[in-house]
Image (tube, rainbow, N blue to C red; front, side, top):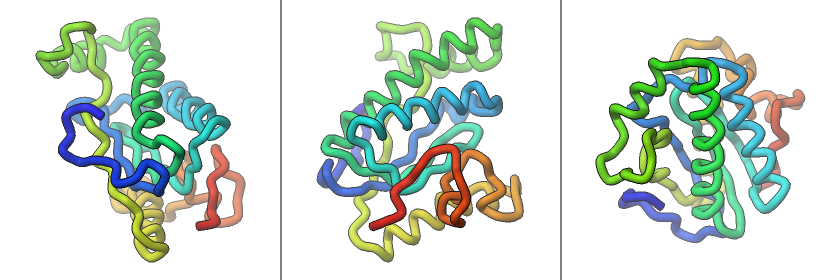
Length: 176
C-alpha cells in the first residue's frame, strides 16, 4: 500500500489506521465532503469491513477496523473517496484545495493531475483489548484535545456517540 514502511501485520486482525489528506490540507470542512467518506465506509461495511471506531477531522481520519483484506479495503477507500472528492471540488470551484492538491502531488504520480491522500496508512495491529480501548479512547478524544468540543460525543463525525448508547452516523461494532 503506497510507499509506507508500515505494514499490516495480519489483514484479518483489527488495526488502528490513519489516513491523511496530502500536506494536511483541510478538505473535510463541509458536510458534503465528510459524507463522501461516510458513504464509502458504509459501503465497505456492507461488504467485509468491521468498524470499531472512527473520527473524521478536517484533514485526516482515524479508525479501528478489520476485514478479510484490510489493506485492500484501505486502498479501495482511498481510491473511491479521491475519485469523488476531486470532482466535488472542481464542480464547486474550490480552487484553493485543488491548487494545493496539484502543487503537493508527488512527482512519480504522473498518471493524474491531483493527489488527494498521503501515501500509506501507518497501520498499527491491535494486539489485545487494552490496546483496543486505548485506541478507541484516543480516536474519540481527538476533537477534544484539539479544542473543538468539550466532550467526545459532541463531535458529530465520530463513533463516540455510539459508545455512549446514542445513535451515531455509522453503526460500529462495540463487541471486541
